[in-house]
Amino acid sequence: MTLQNLKDKIKDWEITSSRREKILLFIVTVIIPAFLFYRFYYAPSQEKIKGLQEEIKKLELEIAKMEIFAKKEKELEEQLKQRKFFLEEIKQILPTEQEVPKLLKDVSMLAKKNGLEILNFTPRGEEKRDYYNIIPFDVQIKGTFVDTLKFFNEVERLARLVKLNSLEITPLEKEEKLTAKINFITYKYTGEPIEKKDKK
Image 1: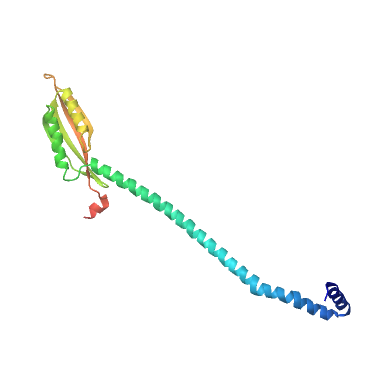
Image 2 (image 1 turned 180 degrees about the vertical axis):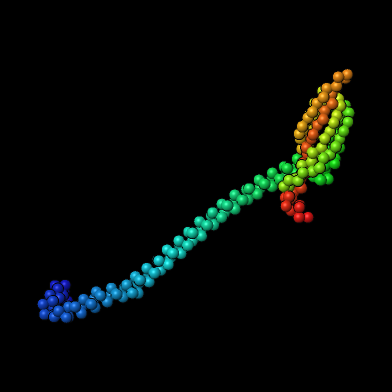
């Protein structure tokens, strides 16, 4: 059958067929295939695509949360690292409970080493702070101005922290010397907050 013959037959069918036959043919050739395409291919595909899109959104949210957490964790790790480093530095500066008596003895020895006469040496009561205690002690010395300055310089260079809190100097009239009443402060590392220590 040639293409021309096929065209002629279709033309004849269009002329001779009823409206009902034409509608049935349209339903069979267009509506039913379209419905089958939608029902068994397009609709399931759309559902699948929708499900995948929702899954992608969930994954994106999870990844964003994980990235925030990872960033915070990294920041916390860095802060913890800095705090540990700072703590180690503090431990090197502040004497421990066992080291305080030796430190007080070292201050006394430095006074004598610089030719100063110790008139009085009085440790005071400790003042509690979070993670450390303040330990004040009074020293009264007699000596020359130069020797007193040398003494202060050497106390300042001690490995453990000793701070000159107050100073009262009185020149002696009949001698080329002076007396100095000094309040020093040192610190004892405890590693414990006040609340925890008070509960003991």
